[in-house]
Length: 76
Image 1: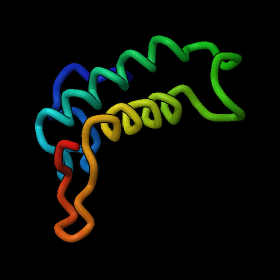
Image 2: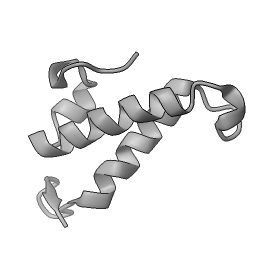
Image 3: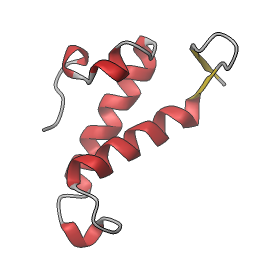
């Protein structure tokens, strides 16, 4: 279930991340969705969707960090 538009992203992503971070998330998710289509390419019993979400969050966290005092995401 790749995402075509930012408005299709999960609420937890749309409501918390800045637009640029959402774009990173979407592209990373879509790439991982294609890359990990075969179960033997994934770790443990993770589904294709779970794996793609994990990869997407990791991609966001490479560029952004959550400010503990405000709870907002900001560029590193």
